[in-house]
Length: 336
Image (cartoon, rainbow, N blue to C red):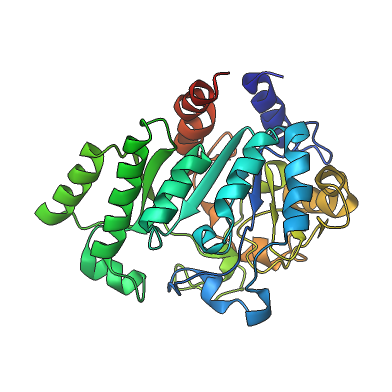
């Protein structure tokens, strides 16, 4: 099936509010590890219980990899933790690619990019690596990323850019993620220009969200319903997230697995996608009756501007990363 036809089926499932969408999940989040080396104020990872900080088992990763080819989905090989902490991150990037994932994407805080990790990451061949640095202002960075140093992080990014260049430049597309309002003084502009001159492809700006009410936003107390009627959320028609312990949730905003739809170590993902728990959530989203889903009631994302019901702030990134330029780059690398 062509990418255009697949995307059309995905869109129709949402616009028609189908309880049992014909298209499989477009995107799969795989919580390679829920361990992280940072405790950032804007991220609920710092609130995870110790018993939830774990690497996903090899058996579960292999089980998931065996399903992505049939679904032809994009795989985000990250979720609640820092994927470069997993001792075999490179092997699993390769494995999900071999098994037929449409794209494999990695999202890293970039603080662990030693020379060895940078070279291993390039060799593993993810299609996209997002470098989540938040800001190029060292003072703001130190406040947002407790325990991290901007100069050291950017040195790791330079290692990754150099490793990709040394490998012939055919490695992953690299995007810098900046969050919220930015201070753009001469030093910050110089840092960005240096990264772009070394090969950085994209700069993505995002507005912070409240992680389904897990962190404060707009002055609201976490896990209390926000004012206003939300739009139907696209996630129940769009993707699944598999936590490191095997629980499957409909949305990466459900950080703690409060809306578990099933277990990936006990059922196939397509069974979970079409089972009653997922259908019940889609019905609730369609009817805007969300009392049973406090994560949805507290989430700020469905209250943001939309276009045809789709989240407007995400459309550009979806178009670039999943529809046009980066998929073409991935096909060129693979010889498709």
